[in-house]
Length: 238
Image (cartoon, rainbow, N blue to C red; front, top):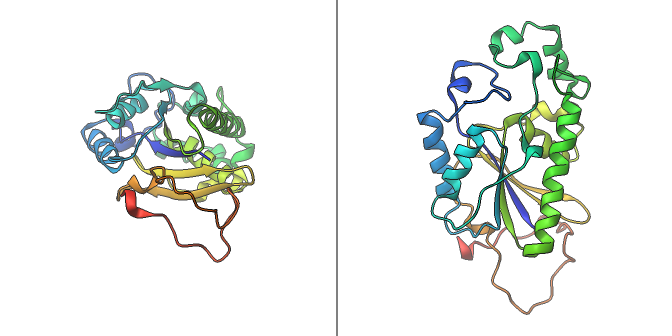
């Protein structure tokens, strides 16, 4: 049961100015965004990582490199984590887009939304979820069930992945908030996904490190939920 940390890229000038960057090239972190990414990296101190995988766009690569600082890992790009293709909406101001008839569909029925000249939100969700679940299963085979890895992506993409993990219909995904450089944590199991953290921006995640191996019988089968809630994470590694 590997654990994936979903990291949104840090703030960009487009974010700050209210422009929908989409897949535009050359959109980099601004000064505040770089600070946010470095703060996110500090939250991962003491946590062994099996892989850091990123959307190919520059703002995610910038964030991923800061998360990788001081680690002997090779950055891997995955187009499954790429930003939604907003088509003709790309590069436009959010306040102008909010006047478009499609805006209401995006807000209330995103599963029915397809951006003009671009991608359907349902297609974005399907390929992002497939990318994360597929990579997670692959890492379990190679690194074992205690592997922890990071996927660096975009706001709507991470919201779609979290909605799937929560068992929510895509039409409910706008209820989820994913801030720049926030970290969300999901653990997939054969029965279900466990959402451990969403949209967090403070606090160490070192407690996600694999526990010291002890010869003891599990209280419940691996992947089962603890009835009553359990005792929480073991913070010995924090």
